[in-house]
Length: 193
Image 1: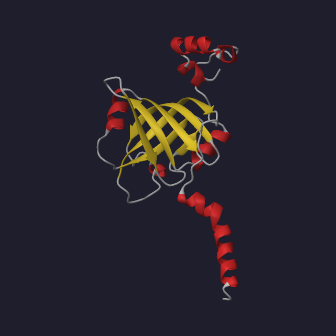
Image 2 (image 1 turned 180 degrees about the horizontal axis):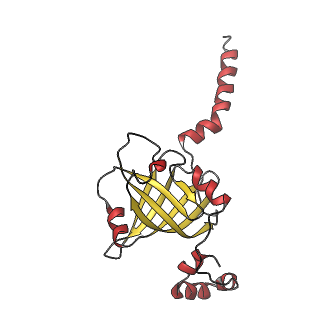
Image 3 (image 1 turned 60 degrees about the horizontal axis):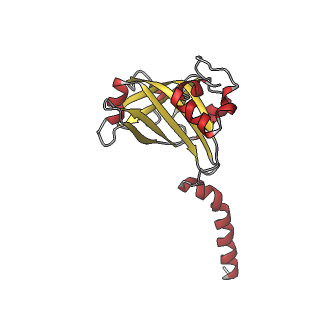
């Protein structure tokens, strides 16, 4: 069993798995206290993302989920256990920052909608200055307030069954650009140009 499952399969979760009939498939693998290691697949997947979702928990016990986005590769894989990203000035609510100041645990979801893939990551956050992590800053001159450095505790790839494919403008252009150019050339030829 991965560290992700050791953390998330609490007694209540294991009881629900037992009631629903899925416990046997997870029970045969021994639990581990060693943090999961990001392999080549995870590193490449994270490096290609242009956004992710991050959940933290506030002092009142309420979860808070925030979408984070940037240029492809804005989340840096520093090593097999560490991720980092620059935190740009936004709406100035500072909910995630306040939450991780009190409880450094977060959950991340990285999505690849076109390929129906999802990677869930559990991590602990340390907040550093941009000067402490200059290699994480992709956009010099941008209003970066801090850098989130995440120590990965566990991760899990999720089943693609219920992921609806979605595409960014760049992905649509990449997929349809050559076809549109061919159709425009064909149309110009039909018009006698």
